[in-house]
Length: 361
Image (cartoon, rainbow, N blue to C red; front, side, top):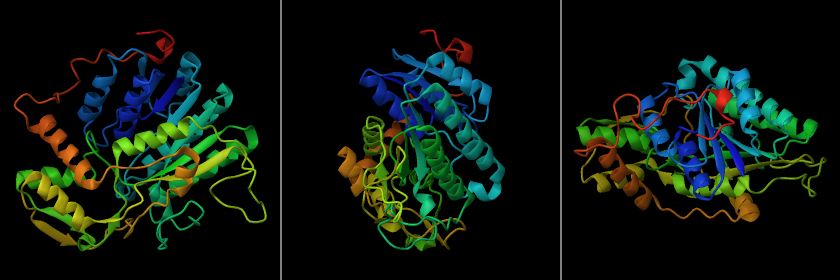
């Protein structure tokens, strides 16, 4: 297939592009390489994709409607995976406008582009953060999600509502995936695993919020990507069991689905830190702090619907996943001949103008 992946230089996006290329799909990666975290890591991920046959790249933002429309017109994707977004719960307290620009305006541009291009299926990233103040565990897609506790969460809930509107009005098949705490090699520097690893190795104290007593459904990157691909390959239709007298957020009389995608296991943060310490062979100095505004105490995904419909089966325990991350971190940042680069990746050619995306590199 021809698949357009937004956020292609991101953690999940780069891994997804690699898997799609490996199975023979043609991929257009779309990313603005912003500086929310070190763009050199994004460029290094991208440098692994650029030499591969079937991969093309567009350097542009979702908010740039004209650039996005040109990319669709030139590449003519059959299916789209929208992973680009302004990420981060805590950052949404500091810069809320970024979330409206990217996650609301940008997502509307994606929906419009898909609608007019006749896209077969749009898969888009939602988030476990939409469960907000909910306390019933595990979180199920049938649960109400009307009490977000961060603007990031509110923007992701808005995406789900916007997608349903386009599925209903225009027959655009859409599937939303509520990601639960993704980790692994090439992960984001603002996530706990990366921060803890860097600080423990540097002999610096780590900040442990909620005194380490909150829990997360940590999900390994390979399991996540497998679930995304299984979902992408399954185009939704109207749910024949949908009852408008007893509606559920998970499906609709329109071609629309919502799924949790996680590990279906709760891991307390203190246990997570112990695994990191074991893999590093060092103990952390812990600075215990209260729960931060916008954070939630616990998350756990009910993934039965995704398992039922796609055969999704997460299988990576944190002991294995954290070890793989630590091995990658040491190689990427600490080896004598590091994989990372300073500045732009030397193997990356100048990025193609969007107008040239119809041409093979």
